[in-house]
Image 1 (cartoon, helix red, strand yellow):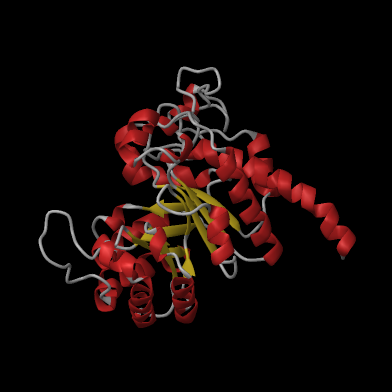
Image 2 (cartoon, rainbow, N blue to C red):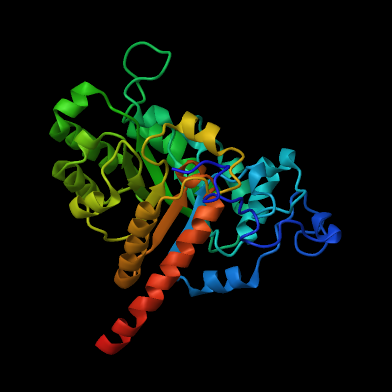
Amino acid sequence: MTGRGDSAAPRQGGLFGPLEEPAAASAGAGAGAGRPVAAAPVDPATAALAASLPAKLRLGTSSWAFAGWRGAVYAARAPKRHLSKHGLGAYAEHPLLRAVGVDRTFYAPISAEVFAEYAAQVPAGFRFLVKAWAEVTSPRLHGRTGLNPNYLDAACAEDRCVAPALEGLGSKLGPLLLQFPPQGAAAARRPEAWAARLHEFLAALPEGPRYVVELRDEALFTEDYVQALDAAGARHGYVAHPRMPSLARQRALAPLRGPVTVRWMLRQGFDYQQAKERYEPFDALVDRDPETRAALTAMATEAAALDVEMVVIVNNKAEGSSPLSVLELARQIAQASLAAAPRSTSAS
């Protein structure tokens, strides 16, 4: 790994466009005029890159309110205090960012009205990945004794997670992600029983959303688990995370079919706090991960060949700056798509 001061990890805030835009633009003139947060100018080469990607591929980041993205996603002098409430519209103007993860819903539910405010800021083709409330997927809760009464409660999930997202986001709702934190030793000892209980929960959820399950227990990632998802019409959420097998191993057990959701979350050797301390303010690629980028490129190429939708969400803790990771990933996917095109033409 390379540190921020090494020559292999230069600051890259200008890869999307100039780090400093003209004063009129930073004050809100032109695109985004009158808004609290203006978008950064986009390099024409980046716009052309976005246009070359598979049409059903949507790239995005985990959340959007990071001051370190000024000059890359936001105007260089965009007020930090406005990014959370008003930054989404500027984020969605970037041609490479066609999706975003809503992480705050993992910690507490939000209302349909808040979701509707998000939806109003983005174009029709934009998609939100919404994380379900942790109380639905956690058998025990930190700081509380006893079992969690809301664990795998489909009625609670519908009321607190599904219904508000559907009502507020409408057609802009993408994957509804059920992230299961470590489930404990009892579940790991009997993964087949846990898979059966998961199936009962998923089968009881209302139809409509694209339910995606993401694990943090390798012991639960079994054939029984994949079969439980298939039987309930749900999908495995592929995730690049130290607690899970490689993306290649996940694909081997859970082959790509139907809409694909993958999150690039955290590199090997770090926990989230360590990565946060190393990478803030999230304005540079500090630790490049070519292996994961290659795996994601292979998945995107396969999804395009299958003509299925694919949402890729990238976290700042993956390499140091998720918008810059998205840019590098987009370049590699575009190159792979170009390389595959002659073979597709000759085979037709």
